[in-house]
Image (cartoon, rainbow, N blue to C red; front, side, top):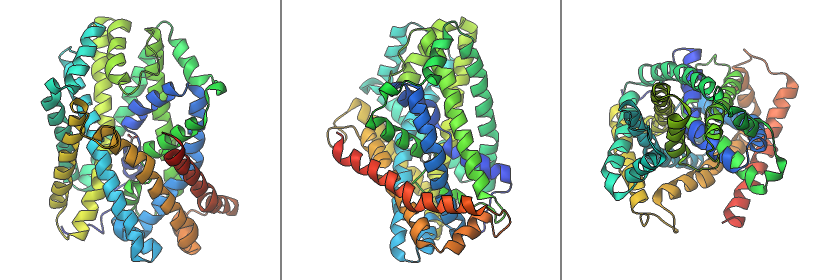
Length: 455
Ligand code: PHE
């Protein structure tokens, strides 16, 4: 099948879960608690909620509008929406952005697979020294082959789902995995809150301390909302091209944002009470879930409970990562299969080979920090370039496109699915106002401040 223009998700719930699966990922379970910990807890969460709901839902809708209107890959969708070939650049940048994110994301996803294996064989439980040695060995020259192999394994796993197609691969996998993931998080959250001293973690999470808020907090909250909702990567444009004509995209955007926030907060409820109950600092950084959480399983629970809960936790991380990597891979697969007029398998092979090679380089950059630019590792280069540059640029351009260039009639038709779900006039005006002025201004200010005024 060289052209999948007529491909749709089969059901509404499948469309929502697939898109929520893209949003819910390591961003929610790995990054959100880390960034919340570093920014002092509840005050950060409030700012994050603001960005997620106002900026996030509006930006998500702009991508849905471009995607469903285009009914094609991001390259063609942007050209169709902007009625000029130059808009295709945003489609190409999104291909680059999705592939770069997949490259470094697969390294962390690979660690999750490795930790799942360790959890099953009892290897994550033990003294803190043992846990620390496990992690440092994995990312050192000694463990580097394992590290590279597992990140390639993750890209290949993603590939195997992608080549099954949109309905049988993406939709089916997400429909099973997302509800399971939420269920597992609830079980873990309850276990964590039952620990002595757990209330300190809940207090950290829910009692705001505004003295900790700085200009940087706003930037962190916005980038977190972007990353977490998969904005500015054309992932949502690609998925929206698979939405049916009668899909209520306004409702979809709201539901997906709510699921995303709930999962992030549930992850916080799982991680912070457990961490506080054993006296682990909440700002431990990216290693939080690989260094401190195993320590929590060892010291806070009985050996049997610790064993099963650690398996559940790392299984949960693998599921969360997989539903997201599928969506990153799909951007390139759909774009290349249509533009090169080739099969999904062939297009998928190209993305898989490219991201595996880049993934290996990102994995290597932990043991060989000289692999990288501007004094940072390649892993950090990819992370900052995508979240500080490509994602804001993609989201900014999409807002400008929808707010200033697309005909209003097309926007209203998409939002209301051809008058099937009428929007109150006030809501329509608010949306247009947000997309025309508020979102581009906020994205622009935060982007410029961070590129030019912070180190
Ligand atoms: N939203 C995903 C997460 O929270 C990451 C992601 C970014 C997925 C960009 C797709 C595109 O982990």
